[in-house]
Image (cartoon, rainbow over all chains, first blue to last red; front, side):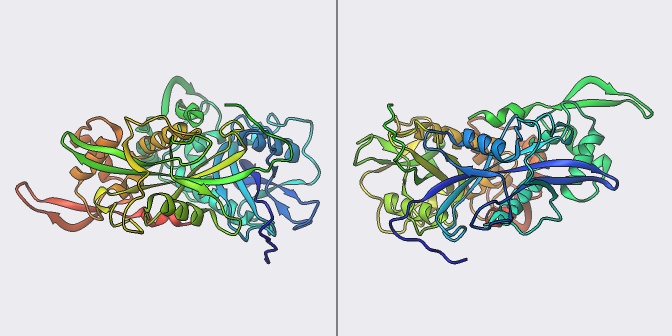
Length: 226
Length: 226
């Protein structure tokens, strides 16, 4: 990529979002994210993360939420700031992108739509089968996956992929999908039962199997505690 | 604070840094950070975080490092991006601040100086006795402290405050200073000995007491792995 920077050009600020969701498939759950096909240069027709320009009179969080709705019609209840990407050569002009992310339950994707349907130029992709992306968006997705896979062991970030209440087995299956490998059930139970943010409820999931205690995540509200 | 935004104004991008260090005092270690007295409006003469404007042809990491050297003469080996602050009313004009942070060992502060001495308008403050800060820098420091105190339990961020090799007692004392409370030694040992990033060496600290095994942090290099 060549740079056409001149000293009189301004630095512009954009926001982008990485939305992860689990989709049930015949061979198990898959980790997916929505991409938007670009309708203008640069990178016309390439796939890119949802996003847009920051307005002069708009906070960063509001810009992330607005541009996500405008491009994908999705409206997650909570977007968290992930990282700001600002390398000089990441775009033909100088653009700083403040990137947000969120987890969505697949059965809530429809509920998180702000308007009727997703625009035609939006598609969901398996994170393991992404097309070539515009700008440095491949690096951004790789960073988000790295953070997700490193955080998932001790954080609440994966809770967005779960119902409000869940069994330890359901939690382990989410971890297995995100990490892409099987986890030992008894080790997992021992590790997670000691986690402060995991709260045992008085309810149980009943059915064909032995009743399983339901848990919820306590610390989700901490994410907005700044 | 009043806003003088006009629609033709540009959004400007700044970088700031929060540098935490432990200083030995008569009553134990204290968590300190350097501030710079402002020499121009807005907020003339108020204390502020070290920082400056992002240059058009400069990556974010480089800008953080450069402006930290220019304002404080400090050159930590590694700056990590913390968060980007962009509220509309945080400055009289529209300014997005990408904030970096680093931990410095107090006995390394001198070694991390890029030039001879710190400029006259720099002072180190106890985080529990900060002056009024310019812009939203009080909120930024509070956020950094919140992240530090929440991350310190399971992360490598506190390792920057320690020598390359350390005993579990030394590690616990750093945690106690950062968290501002005493920790139970045996609980701490049990919790930390299981941490993947904590690697037992074959060396021991000897002296008046029973020899204590030395540990090192494995995962520090992961911080730059993106």
